Length: 152
Image (cartoon, rainbow, N blue to C red; front, side, top):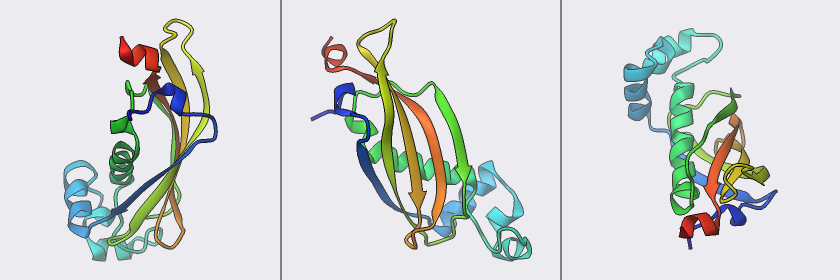
């Protein structure tokens, strides 16, 4: 059954993943979109005192999360997209081979005043490695049709 706005109750937690961060995928993403040396090469990453080795671009981490959210609930919902992200915090580096999982949580929701068949849902997500290290936190707004809106 496709999830509509009514199914996203306050406090609902949705498990995400797993998704494994693959070395070659990390480098390919970085080469195209974020070519900083520590995203492209183990030696350069090791020379960087802050990251201490090859790491995924934060934007790649966001992309991996988006894939996990799409598979976890968005593609089977009445999602109408998002008007934006409130914040993204990269808490720790993602390394080759890290197995990422997460939890999406409904923080609040309300119906649109102008379009009562559209729900405005505030979501919070935490993403962590197989070792329980939080690598990303984010909050954003998800627009969902109500059952009535989806039926129209």
